[in-house]
Amino acid sequence: MTKTSRKKPKKPYPSFPLTAHPNGQWCKKILGKVHFFGVWADPDAALEHYHRMAADLHAGREPASVDDVELTVKELGNQYLTYQMGRVSTGQIGPRWFEDCRRVLKQFARNVGTARPVASLTAADFQQYRRLLGTRGLRGKGLGVHAITRTLTVVIGTFKWGVESGLVEQMPRWGKAFAKPSAADIRRSRAKRERENGKKLFSAEQIRALLDAAMPDVKAAILLGINGGFGNTDCAALPRAAVDLAQAVIDFERPKTAVRRVVPLWPETVSALRTVLEADRAKAANDAAKSLVFRSELGFPLVRQVIKRTEKDEIRKVTYIDRLGDWVDDLLVEKGLKRFGLGFYTLRHTFRTWADETNDQHAIHVVMGHAIPGMSGIYVEEIGLERLRRVVNHVRNKLWPRCRRGTSAGKSVSR
Image (cartoon, rainbow, N blue to C red):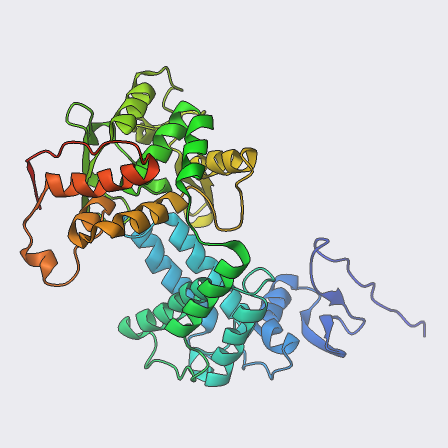
């Protein structure tokens, strides 16, 4: 009798992770041992079986039963992301935060096992992941204290949502090592960063040098940053209707906090803004840019998020574009001032540091768009405009020491 043999099939596509074994199954060698995942005739099912077991096998763990119907880590993550996607559509969170959640949960699931039942996770799993954040982070480099805090916030928030939604019976046991960095950790990190790179602070001479070299749009933005503590997004989202050049004041809600802010403007800031508003600018590329003070060279808002979606209209990728940050970084390099941690947002740090010398915390909060903390935020109904002017004029005198203080208006700002 002539012996017959079956011809092994080719991979369905080049990146297919499994190999055809002579016994008629798809297989893969993991940690020195060959594992089988399904027959040649059904490569899709074999691939799905592999993905359910891969994280455990590569980590040297016994895989969870494929018949287990308990909620898996991957399923919990996907349901939480679906919930977060709904919040993006209603404006409760931004696409960038959604992208952060997606990236964190994807890495977390791969680390502990995508097919692991949520109920099987132990403190050791969470503590191992916590150690990973400090050594390899999300992209092969250990995370800093603030990034670790944000990452753990996402993971803990996912499980808390799972409990509140009835998907998970109780919060897992994290273990003591699965903890956010302490206040002491944050202080040590800041001290180390300042020793290596200096404080996140501009000198008056550096700001004046930037103003002298900046093009009109960047000059106006820099003045807003040091005049009123504007950040990148604050400038990018500033509507023309909020700027009263005649009264030399800006009055609008800060985009990040939705807290009303009132900023008395210096004469230099008024002049710079007038130049921007009267200049021929790029035509608005979308409706969002039409009403804004600043536009990019292509007519878009200076800070924006480009969202790529799947065929099911789900968010696949979010790209963050910050042209203002890019412009100022280029200017810092040109003037020989660029160093780690120094950028446009440093102007907000500088404003807050200099303004603190006035000892008028409530007025500073109003200018910067912060809610007045505690019971004072409930009972303080008005902040006199003259108080706000004293704050911003003090900062102006720090920037230009020979400038005289501007006169204070006698109006009040209703809260």
